[in-house]
Length: 238
Length: 262
Image (spheres, rainbow over the protein chains, first blue to last red):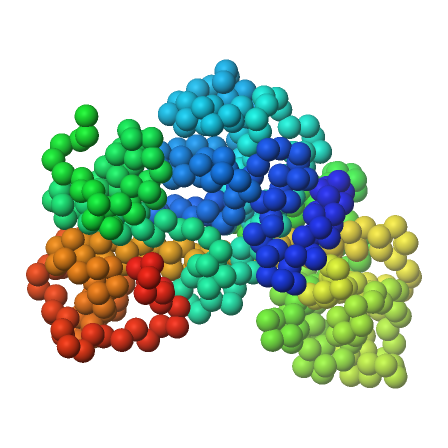
């Protein structure tokens, strides 16, 4: 508890200079990666229904991992959020339990060797997850683990503070502009549902499958659908 | 049960409440009951500040205690009130029928059979949320370690209450955020469907949905949900007037990216 509080004070003091210019929250991911000494980090916002947004990512690999988790609907952040506890995969190439086979294949190809996700939550209130990735295998040490937990707590406060000013029924402007909620994907799902005469939920599944088979992100595929460069028609793509 | 065992059980009971089925009244009733069991006092009670700041009697170990605490609040004088205002403990104060500090409270307390009083603040990091009152029917002082134990119990209860309050606030905000995001997503889905079915771009599709909602006095989210779920026909939506496009009134609408602020 004391260690936790000490590290929290340290993290807050490192974040503080950036809060004034409004970049504090976006710095959270960089701070998470720097403090824990991993290759990169991301914070994903999740709800139990549809919402899935990236609050921040440190690098292309972190953004790719977020896209993969959103495209596949599986991954450490989703598990950490659902289970309310850290999900640690120190050996992605040789996992003790093969949890996310599709995600692991793509992540390994992108050079990721270890993944760690920590729920962003307060009590029973679950907001999302902090994901750390590293280009070498191996577990986090105790201090790294404690730092990750502390940053997850700071992220919780930051997200709630951002939403606190929003009028009822809306997403705060800060979150709206700072996070990527993949709205284009939901527009594309609406279009695909008309193109194929299926429900929007199934259309989202089709978009995901299409993106995964073509090894593209679901945002890219959706942008093409919305701009009418591609149509998803007929049966599942071969 | 030994005093130590009882203390440990009390701490566990109070800490249990940190997780599920939290009930402020339960926590504070446990606190006041255990103070009487563990410490050398005859009655104990807790006052808590309501959101507006005024104190309320929340738990009492006896009816006599409850009556006296209510009287204290009505008279606006007494150890609990002073302790809450100052945030400082009041320990081993002898009560006599004639008292300059709290003339009305002291007379009533003595009439109720109480002889000495203690009040401990319930505070965490500068925030005082209430006060714990303990009364004895005989003269004589509380031992110093009894005061420490009482303050420790009050501190655990305080942490439980403050954590509960912040969790409730977080739950409200998070539910609001989830709801706002989910309605946004449904609107985006409906825009995509209208766009594909009618050949309009995303902005014009949104305008069509919104103007139909306005014309028919429907909530935008409800109309969008109807479209997304297939229960509202897209063909049946009012067409957009060609010459006078509906102007966006939202300051956040960025026409280029086709996204829709809720």
